[in-house]
Every structure is written in structure tokens, then in C-alpha cells.
Image 1 (tube, rainbow, N blue to C red):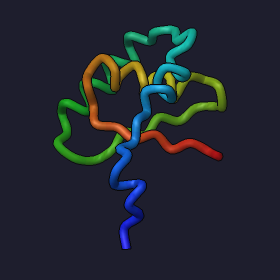
Image 2 (image 1 turned 120 degrees about the vertical axis):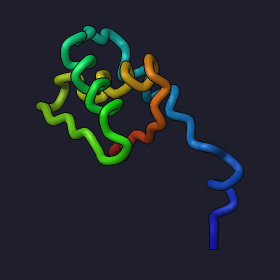
Image 3 (image 1 turned 90 degrees about the horizontal axis):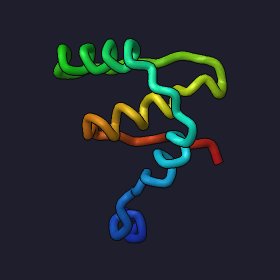
Length: 77
């Protein structure tokens, strides 16, 4: 059975993205490489690996905001 509360309320990641983008330092080379990879592949995934606090979520939020990518964030807690 589908939880009706989930169906009625779509997920909104705006606050997650806004928080991730606070103090974001652009990385044009990395942003360009990821954008090119995504444009060159119709399916698949791109995995960004880095230490905690290195800006992975901020990078994802910046790419989503500038390119309108379909997205979903997973958050602990």
C-alpha cells in the first residue's frame, strides 16, 4: 500500500540545495568535465568521491541549478 502522505507531498530539495550552495567556490574545470560526461551518455551515473566537507553536495547542487538536471539528494537523519 502506498503512503498517501508521500503521494500528496512531492519532495522538495530546495533547502538542501540552498544550504549546500552557501559559500560554494566554483570549480569550472570539474563542472565542465561532469557536464560533458553527462551530455555524452544517455544513461549511467557519474560518481564524485571526496572527503567530508570537500564540496561534493555543493558541486552537485551547482550543476543541478545551472543545468536543470533531474535530481534526488540522500541525507543522513
